Image 1 (cartoon, rainbow, N blue to C red):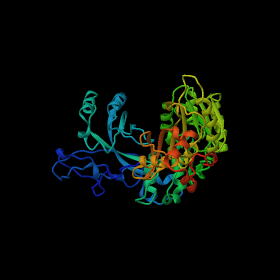
Image 2: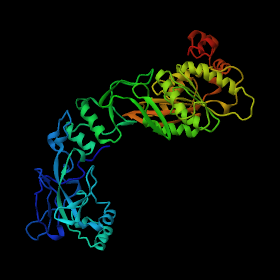
Image 3: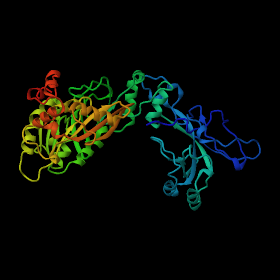
Image 4: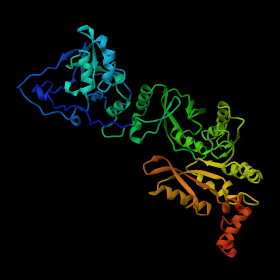
Amino acid sequence: MRILWKLFGFSRRLLQEEWCHPSESILLFTLVPRLRKAPSVFLLGQRQGLSTMPEIEASVRDSELFSPPSDVRGMRELDRTAFKKTVSIPVLKARKEVVNRLMRALRRVALQRPGIKRVIEDPKDEDSRLIMLDPYRMLTADSFDKAELGVLKELDVSPQLSQYNLELTYENFKSEEILKAVLPEGQDVTSGFSRVGHIAHLNLRDHQLPFKHLIGQVMVDKNPGITSAVNKTSNIDNTYRNFQMEVLCGEENMLTKVRENNYTYEFDFSKVYWNPRLSTEHGRITELLNPGDVLFDVFAGVGPFAIPAARKNCTVFANDLNPESHKWLLHNCKLNKVDQKVKVFNMDGKDFIQGPVREELMLRLGLSTEAKPSVHIVMNLPAKAIEFLSVFRSLLDGQPCSTELLPTVHCYCFSKDSDPAKDVRQQAEAVLGISLETSSSVHLVRNVAPNKEMLCITFQIPTATLYRNQSLSLQNDQEPPLKRQKTGDPFSGEPQIASDS
């Protein structure tokens, strides 16, 4: 999350005290340069005639009011004691018996800072309390809105504001504020991460690497439940879909548990693929399924598509090449009590399609029963899944089934094209050897990086592609046999070629 650092604050050039005409009264909140032993409270009054100042606009207030001390810039090893600072905050004095009711009315203007009590004792009056207010919202008593002023009047509380010297420490600063103060000026600040159970997964840029351990420590400190911060040190391996990572801070235990869409998954994050940013997509595909449907999950991972589908009473065939993913897929099926509804495989995606998928399709599509379930094939391997579409060419023998029973494919892919939907459709068409222009849809899943999108193309496999005899007929109609022999077309539909595609 980015913070608009220059949106609020006061100008450093303002004098520490300045008196204005009552109609232009201004409350100034200035930084106190030295930490005082005891907090002090003093009243800001009004006096006429000595001088006037222009009204302060929010956009030019001091942006450093709630930023850490400037001398933490460049810190590589976290020193929490270096973040002490004292600032002046507007406070409202009220009798302690009316504070609870008053706080409900002042939610809009009450101070919101990590680890800071908004109501404190009045050091000069034990029967009163001081309510800390947001200095960005409260400049004068005129900053109260009509409703707030009405409650103040009803409770007999004076709208007169005082100033309180508040000591800030490391615990009171947000992670974005700490990192912006520490990293070199003008450089991007990492404040976001992927949460995987107790693990914060970061993907740091090169200029942030000298500060990686400090960044990791801040992520652990500022996010309850996070006990480990890791940074990706390599790209995702396209074979097993895992990546090398470095533990920046905290425990090295990568065995974790996550909840997604009311399902529980356990796995070793260092050995399998898991992306919490795909939870919406997992739910979207599940919503497309009806009880009794059949789902083939070619690259199943630890089960985020397979398990919800099984809980929806679908018949599920789930596969993953990674032995660790296969192990945790079995574990998660038992954990979510769907192990009797999911058949799990540990095969290459191509072998899975040519083996179990082909066998099940031949069996189900050949049944004579009237009510036949819909068949869905999910292929979530964005870097390479489109290449696997070639395996569907001439996959089945025999008499083609009716069009409405043809399997529906949900194939994920990346695109850097200016028209990503058209790009992925053309990629799929090139592999399948048939037009999908009027028979497919493309869903934008998420933005992966600048100018790089993850998409899902959905289509029914055309009869001419799926069935061997139909593929041969299509090729015969499209080009002379002599030309096919001469070019050695790998998609000619001949049995021996189809098995190698």
